[in-house]
Length: 385
Ligand SMILES: [Zn+2]
Image (cartoon, rainbow, N blue to C red; front, side, top):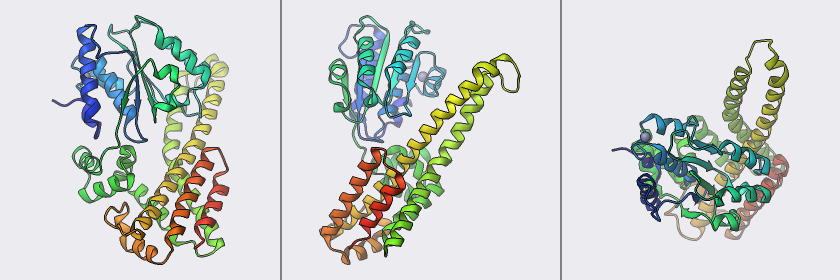
């Protein structure tokens, strides 16, 4: 029988625990297996939020997470009254947002089972937001289950994490990701292998690459940038190209979503009608949504640039491996010849330097520096021998 846990790649070690907890929650026994606060940690792309949503489905589904019933479906698509998945587009989750959330989940679950809150970015809680959340988690006898997701346990405030059960996701193996893409998404084996390899265990990125021709060709262009750094002018041009490619990629996905959101909001306020609703609350709500969308798209562009920098880092990582005599575990094996010839023509100490400056640039970007300026500084560094 298929289950919602089938899509968790390489996480067998936690699936049994989650299944056991869901089963225990059903019997109502006072077992140790079920608890109402969990922290799921794991490297980016390992599927922390997918694991949390699967667990939410298993808790509310009459068949322990079949993946096929109405409950399972509505829980995954945000339509279930007892399952709330919170994502933040901003850099932090503020105390007001937690207060709103607590108001929304204050009622007993409508279906009589559990109310489940999945918080995707528990690492972004401000201190006061964390304190507000802590009170809710500590409340005894509640039917609410909290599933907090974060990169590592250290990203969650100590008082919160001490009250949660911790599950650690692993980076799935290359083989597990490849097989998943082939079996689940029916991707051709060569593309599945490529996508799995260059995504380094990041499932979402692997699927995105495997199912998107234009994203694959974007990546190809980005991976050629290290060869286009013959002069300072060329380095500046490369920086511009990188920012342009990353921006286009980010905008393609955010524009579609933005439009849909605005439409939905206008419908809610009675689009086309000249009624009072649109005139008073509606216009203001649309304006607020647009502001949110703008800050989200800024973040998506940054994420996209960061992804491009990580891709470029895999190139220098491969060069470094070849220079140290190991060309077996190449990430970009489709570029083998280029990588070997680059490795033969540049000193290995400069490769390590280049990897370092890429990491510094990522760090700088994460502190809200101007993307183009950061990339220009980076590329002019990479242009040096
Ligand atoms: Zn189900």
